[in-house]
Length: 433
Image (cartoon, rainbow, N blue to C red; front, side, top):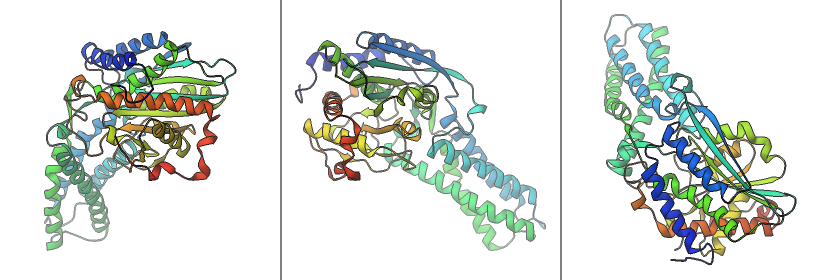
């Protein structure tokens, strides 16, 4: 089914067949695995057919660090509660126990902020090191390169999220909210406990008994968070993120097969590795190749989980709201969508991040273009994310929008045409099929 006058039907078919092929032939391609690297080599071979230049470089990564600290966090919090009760009702307060409890909870809280909210490295060094790759492809313009647009997606798949499979949003919300709230309360209480232990004696009053009981109420959440990730199952990742990967490939395929080149606009594809390990691939790519984007104006469009047409949105605020992305790239995405028959809105802040935030962190104009439901469906990060569970119409529409983005970016003469004096027209947009 053709949704617009965009790509050829053969390219639509190519994307669907390709998603199934990768799911069938490159199983368990979590970050830093041999399967991930084989898939990346396959994607490079595909891009060789349509790009003038392709690059693939390796980087070292500690893939289990991003979520691997969760079981440790659960143990630390449980130990903190145990330490409290070991000293409860003694004749003299044991300062050593209060210090130990405080250190454990502050370490856990630090990991939560640095690894989970800011997507930066905190405890990577304690986890095994592996090798991942980034793949970059360039289709040059007819004349001198004066501007560049990059379509970005990631190639790795995630480990299964236990509570996304069993209960969806309800289970996720209960476990995450209970664990975070319990951690915050433990930190606050342990600070107070430590101060009290420095100036007073035993904690034998009814207040301290009540405080201990409150801590015990959160122990089930600390146990639950230890099993947040099912480390035995790697999902196929058909939606997250082969959909975006094949849309990116589809852009260069369409241009090559129609022998299309822009006069001064370079069109590129970046397929990052180890995104599910905390955006590590994009970070490593920019550490090595930031200068590649300094020569001319560059706009980066990052796609992730292109599954729901009604949820196609523009992401200008990421890393759980801690990193600002480019409004101008957001306008580019919005105008391309309008030309393809859909008005997209600005996504609300949600728990998570895309590679766009890494580009923004390095000063490159970037925004996210995603089709994921913020009320996670049971396919999100579970074994149900298969080639049989993708949305053909959403993939096709997204490709057409990307092709329109490239056209607009070229004909309008670059990113300045989309700044709109700081106004965000897409914020007023709405989704429609």
